Image (cartoon, rainbow, N blue to C red; front, side):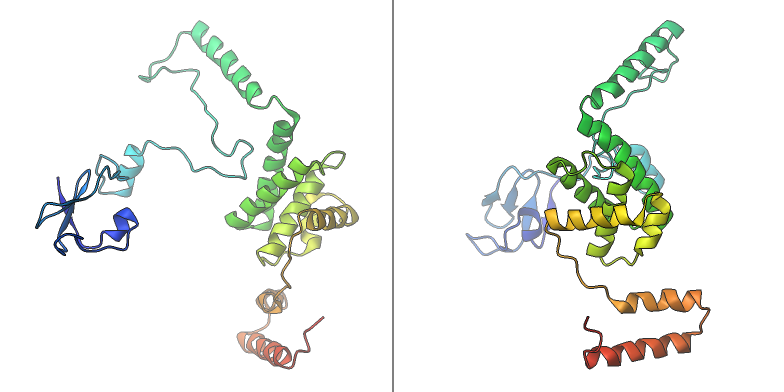
Length: 256
């Protein structure tokens, strides 16, 4: 079925919107882009990224969707692992007991085979710890993903060897918060990690130096609402505090 296109650049990535032969603007697309006026084939073998089925509600889309969850750095296998159901077959019927026991053993060895190296076992524990720390600190997903990336880079360079996983994850998470300007105090990170502040501070400085992270300066305006909420101040007082910070910033008294 042909559909009329007004802007061909969205499909092909080309800025052209008219036929190069006759200058016509009525272009049709199926597996190729054709000019409706002169019949010139402009582009061939166009891939259609849309699904072959239609859905009119969100529930229908979820029921017909055949893809899994997107890949994520915060999962030890990046979400690309394969799992299978040991109790039922592809038609949903229960397997015999002997076959179920066999499938359970296969799933166990499949899980062990995914973590045959020490790095993968380390990531399996670290990503679980990172998820728990992020939930306790109410960390946004993109900050958690960045923390997972930092931890993976540090692990590849071999700086985790001989150090605790919890301390390294906490330092990576704190570094990610500083990079993304998400205000989280070091004391809160230390509290939920159960490690000492000296250890996490040392690991944070090591990560910053080895990965050459350029940590931006903290913006004091982000802390105003949090401090006002803890002190139970009204909105007028909070606005006055922001005005004072703006004036101090203009005269550069906040430097250092």
